[in-house]
Image (cartoon, rainbow, N blue to C red):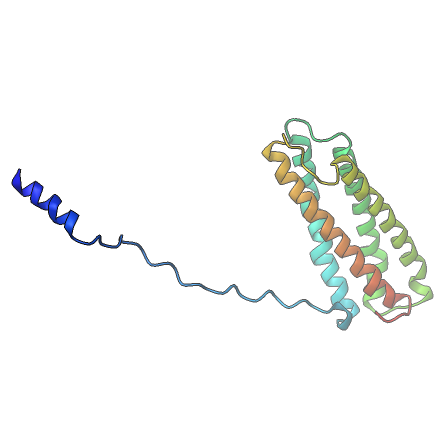
Length: 188
């Protein structure tokens, strides 16, 4: 008993020892973001390949997943969202097919002016329709704002919708302001 009292007394009289901690991991700087490619300096062929390989492939990959998420979200997603996604999916598939079969082969070889004017104008009109469908998605989702009682499945869906919209707008911008601008004879 005396031994325990002596130990307590010593512990009380000795200065406290610092707690044993594990050293903090070294601060590692994040790598710099990849340099943005200036597509205005790339060839038409490189630009077409990028649009098809990145943006068109992304639409084909992401839209079925978005539709499945909208159809399977519980409780039911906002009214009009699934229909707007189905419509934009159908329209984009037809649009991309026309670009890939008709317009892009001509642009990748450097054709300009009259040979590509009409197809470019048609694609630009279709882009306006895509913008209208994105507006429908935003209207159906209260500008992609989650209701306070939204389930977790909605949160993931809304994040994917934001990413899809951003990618589609980048896609259209690159086509209209670089690829199509060159095709119409202007410099981008």
